[in-house]
Length: 194
Image (cartoon, rainbow, N blue to C red; front, side):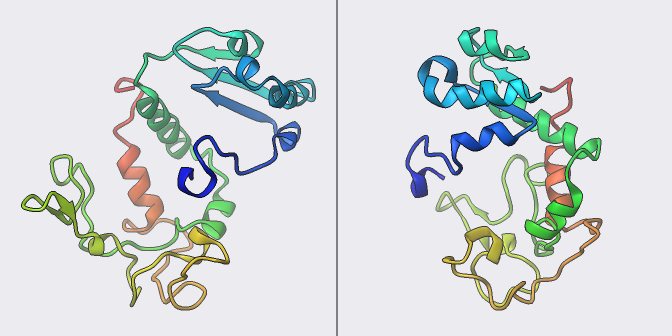
């Protein structure tokens, strides 16, 4: 996102926050650093939105949030991994949206191996060059390199056709669907680990 929109760039209008029912603020003291934008968080809260602030420091944002979650500095990824694990393990995602508007139904090539299979590395790693050959990460049935249409929008280079001949499982149950690969990858982020 930083390359496209600049560091700290937003992809939506802050005014739209008033229409949400949940706001997660992580690693930012938005109340003090962005007070004009934070007014929309407070407007959403008045309308019933729940505000959660995750940060090592208790700040003015923490004081105004419904819940403050203190984490150790540098544990952001583990915390977010735990959130993803919780959502996927308890079927708390918006499954219809995920299946229709993301790459979750696409099948990954049979040669793909995740980090738990290869001692912390993804498939395609070449120790001699210290780089990855990412062809095993491609979607099954894609005859050319590229991205799925919904990953780049209208201006991006889609793989041929709407779904590019990519093998899909709309039920998201196939073990090589992006959804199941994601679920397996984040299964390690248990409450005990996080």
